[in-house]
Length: 136
Image (cartoon, rainbow, N blue to C red; front, side, top):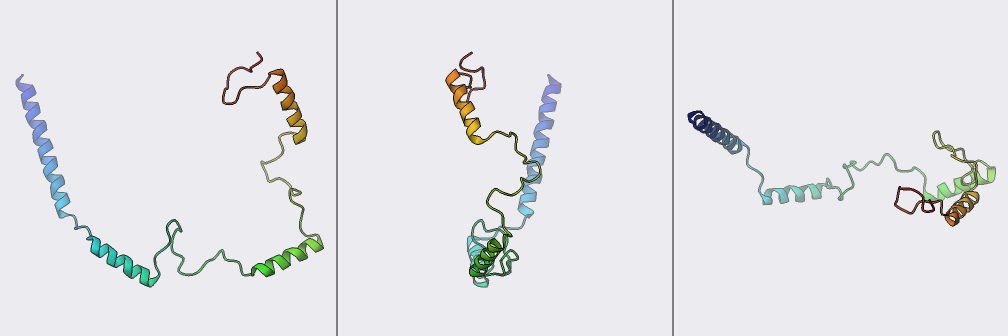
């Protein structure tokens, strides 16, 4: 019984010392800025143009590397010229990118017809259920 009491006293002393050390660390930390100081800093940043809209990311210092050098009218004229010269492809006429090859040679209409037939026969699974097919 004496050993339990001794261990309890030692544990309490260690906890008390740890709490005092933590309080000393908090007291030595620099004081947080007041609300007025933060508002003054924000007002100054707004005057200097350093604020960024919410969610806009990092400030760009007025330089936008992604900005096009052409006007909308110039882009439209270039696109029209490219179409006339045959430099552009029809939508969907390009090659699929690597890893995006078609999984089937069937047309969409053929796949829909197969699915419709399977539903009629009861060979499809109910939506959201991974169990056995309805008809079986």
